[in-house]
Each structure stands twice: as structure tokens, then as C-alpha cells.
Length: 427
Ligand SMILES: Cc1cc2nc3c(=O)[nH]c(=O)nc-3n(C[C@H](O)[C@H](O)[C@H](O)COP(=O)(O)OP(=O)(O)OC[C@H]3O[C@@H](n4cnc5c(N)ncnc54)[C@H](O)[C@@H]3O)c2cc1C
Image 1: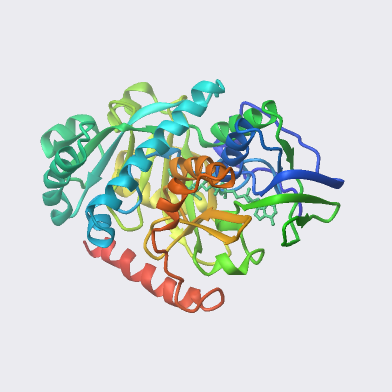
Image 2: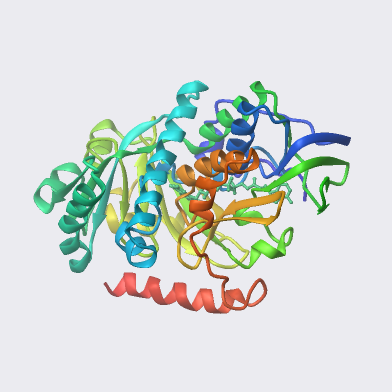
């Protein structure tokens, strides 16, 4: 089906821009063709226009229709994998380079918001809470490691007593407070990026699903009604890649994640849930994440599934995770429930790469895509304009193929995911 409307979410209900962009018709020439109108594609378009390249973005549905318009809106520092894991895997120097890029990713989000005057409820701070005894015991050392080895002073340890003053969330015995992290309204951020790309002169088309492309010095990218002839191609489809690019598809796994929005909460209750209006996340493998909206709704994300179908009752599916943490919300009305698809990798680090000299991709942000996909756009623009160094720091992180490649990934992945979510439950 072509050009589906935005999913029925609190974000779509509070979108502050309505874009209605024409589908691609006929034949057009562009320096770069980008497939996908989420953060990756739109940030690529903005940064390429700033370097003087002509850009055409082809989006099958609406700008921000994918994960970029449906996510938790957490803009976390660092990478999805923690620094000590990265150090063991890649060595301290490369881990440090990745940490710096992670900080730059958050700055890139903030800079784009400021430069293009994007109204998207940008706020500061993430409180990351731990429930298992082992996770709680490790927090002080993790904080000290980031402070001493990385010189990062914006994170601090929060003990159980202080935590109880900051939130009524149940079941957690300690936390870290990272005031370098941000949170925002993800769809309004994405629509603001689309607007910025348009203002800078990029050609943006909605309802323009790419059906195929042929490669060569000049590429031809085809939709049902038109084609783009380009010197470079960027594939920016993440969890929605499907069969378009089998060479990259085996490196990622699409998974579904779900969110709800409660009715607006009284101010006193909202402050009890999250005193300082930070975002919050927990240390479970299948992570729960939450924050308040500008109108004091709790926006809560929890639960995953691995098939192409979403649960019939998404509100009820997510509500049970929310009630484990905030039993006091048992009588609170749930106004919205929705799901989205994101791409993960085996090592939970993103997969950046080249499929040929002029075809690039970035995906597999593993739940850390608000900052990382936005940064990916900047690095994709750099590599296309001839500066590969920083793109190659990301591309150099070995992202193994999923065992079984594109066809047989599911059984192994599902078994693995179920194992880890069982570990979450039994602590
Ligand atoms: C429920 C949920 C919660 C999340 N929470 C967070 C969070 O709090 N923080 C965080 O950092 N990350 C989070 N993520 C992940 C984050 O949203 C993604 O990593 C990020 O949005 C990926 O951006 P993208 O532009 O690469 O992909 P997307 O935003 O998914 O965009 C891909 C686009 O490609 C289009 N497309 C696909 N095929 C074609 C084709 N053939 N032709 C044309 N267009 C095509 C799709 O229609 C889609 O719009 C979450 C994801 C979900 C689903």
C-alpha cells in the first residue's frame, strides 16, 4: 500500500506541521538520491545541501512515518553499547572515538533544532534506573569510569534514598543521572528536519516508494511513477528496508517496539512520577523508557515483538509494563497506544557502510537512533563529499551478519530475545 498516513499516536495528534509533498513524477537528475524520510535521510539531505549538493529524498509514505515519528524521543549520550564493552571489543582509542561521536550526535540534534528553529519540546536529562542487585552495584564504578577515563562530568550516581525523592517508580535501587542527555517530541523534530531540508532546497517526495535501482557511475532509482538519475545513493530505510537491498538486510533485524500515552495527569502526580521532567529508562534487556509530554501525559515505551504483526491491544500490552513501575496509575486512562519497527544489530552497534563506490547506507541503531541516525546524516554527507574519516570510524565497527542471513534470521533471534526477556523477569 502506498503513502500510508502517520500511525495514530499522541505524536501525530500533536504534530505542529502538516507536510503534503507531491510524489515523484517523471524523470529528474540529482547529485544524490536518498531513500527514506526519517532522521537518517533528512539529516543527510540537510547536510548535503549545506555542502552544495542537489538532493532528492524519496519517502514511501510520509516524512517521519517510520520509527522517526513514533519513538520514545530519548536523545541519549554515548553509544547503545556501553563504553566498557566497547573498550574490551575495540580497544580504548576506538572506544573513545565512538564516545566522542556519541556526544557529537546529541549536539547535532540540539544544533539542528536551534539553527532551524524547530519547536519539539527539547528538554534535558535522563535518569537511568537499575533494578537487579548486580546492575545497582555496578553503577558507581560506571560513573567513575566515565568521569575519569572519558572526562565526562555530566553524569552522577543517585542512591536509593535520593532516587525515592526523584521518582515514585517502583522496584529500583539506584540510578545514574545524565544531564548531557536530552529528550524531545520525535515527530515534530522529524517534521522540522523535513521543513529545514525543503528550505535549503532539497527535493522531497512523499508517496514515492522505491521499487528498484540500477547501479553504475550514474544510478537510476525507480518508483512506480518516476525515476531519479543520481551520482550517489543513500539507503536510509532502517527497520523498513524489507527486500529493497538484500546485501544490507542480513546485517540487521527488524523488531517492533510499543508505546502508550496516558491522559493528561494532574501536575502533582506528574511531578511525583518524574520530579525533574527528565526522561527515564531502566536497565532491563527489553528496556522500559518513559517521559512526560508538555501536557503532562506519561509517554511510556515497553515490550517488543518479532513478527510482522502488532498486538491487537497495544494499550493493554504496554500498560502492564507501566503498572509494574507505577502501580498508582492503575485507574489512569490510556489515550493512545502505537507501535513502530526499528532495526537492531547483533552487537547493538549501528551498521554504516558502502555497497559500492557510490551507494552508502546507515542503519541498525538498535534503539539509539534519535541521536545516531541524525549524526549518520552528517557523516553520510561527509563521505559523499570526499571526507571518509569519521564515517569510517562508524563503518569500522564490525557488525556481524545475523546467522542465517536474510531468510533464516528469525528463529535464532526470537529464541535469543525470549531468553533475555525471561532473564529480565526472573532477575
Ligand atoms: C517505538 C520505538 C521507540 C523508540 N525509542 C527510541 C528512543 O527513545 N531513542 C532513540 O534514540 N531511538 C529510539 N527508537 C529508534 C529510532 O526511532 C530509530 O533508530 C530512528 O528513528 C531511525 O531513523 P531512520 O531515519 O533510520 O529510519 P525510519 O525513521 O524508520 O525511516 C525509514 C523510512 O524509510 C521509508 N522507506 C522504507 N522503504 C522505502 C522504499 N522502498 N522507498 C521509499 N521509502 C522507504 C519508510 O517509509 C520510513 O519512513 C525507537 C524506535 C521505536 C520503533
